[in-house]
Length: 129
Ligand SMILES: [Zn+2]
Image (cartoon, rainbow, N blue to C red):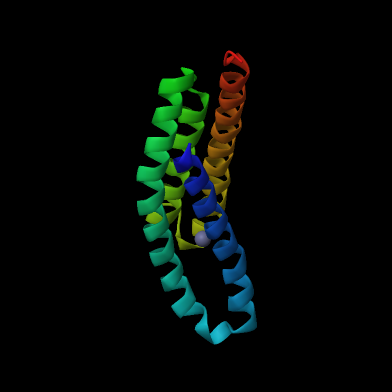
């Protein structure tokens, strides 16, 4: 379940980054071009980290719980993140798509974490005392 905590942390960092960036751009419009370029680079790095972390987390939870819902939700989220950074829908939609994808991925990690805790609780309960 450590990968889910890692994935959630990463999602939180990207959300902070995506929200802070437009504010920084508004307060310093001259650096907008520079920030926009740096933005894509940050998202490529984040996606490169999110893909293996999410892949391991979602597949291992699918193996344990035999529930494909978080696997599908997580994969859709990663796909939306990839679409955002690929600029297929234009550079202007990068942050919107990235935020949507990140929240989707974070949701899947969150469900996995809750399920993991429930499983641990059940294992503790079932132990002979
Ligand atoms: Zn971001």
